[in-house]
Image (cartoon, rainbow, N blue to C red):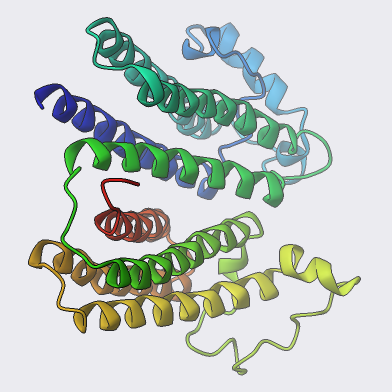
Length: 342
């Protein structure tokens, strides 16, 4: 149906916009730009400073926080503008995503193509987008007091909500663009489905741990691979007390968990591909499984290079995008196992 294909392409474009937003978020984090805009103005915030007086006003607000006093003391206005524009672009792109969602949604709804559950699902995704804007502001607020950066917990919540929105948009797009049902037996479908769910869950956990790595700057220590310094397992994994805070507040432990989870993802992914090859799947479905090892190799190479080269901006952003790409391949594979009835 032509309308379904049009809506599918629209949702796919929105997914791509969310991915760009995630990459912009990585840039703002890596350039320490996230605290440069200290006001939350959902509508008027789309207008940047247009006069010298307005620039001085927003710069004066920034100079009140700990990041300026402890990290960027003496920063000139032109240097402030450099970080301001990254954060401004990140927020502006979020607004554009909202517009790119709402206007086509209203058009498809007015034409009678969006009704019932489908419209309800898309409105729920739109609501999540609004919640994501609020979550971003809550994250920024964590850097207002004594911290020189944002809370890693709120950073991970912000990242995971972006991943959820991205995944929901992509799944709905695939429902519209590729609704066909592959000829699989119930045993084949169940075996591969649950294995695929486990693999994709591990990818999501790895992305969450990656958020803690970013939030704690854990990529700036132990910059060799596969060892951590002179050890296979870093000796300072439990140097914080109580012991359980090490899992989310100790950079050494967080980096170790990121490495360990990458191994679990690799085992789950490779074993899934091997299982799929043994089942004699239809060619169209089998190709989806063949993409998975390529995504894994690319992401592993990006991760190792990012670590060993001390987190250069282009590689770090590519590594975050690669995580979303691997998640995309996992969802794409799972969608191929979806029966039309489900």
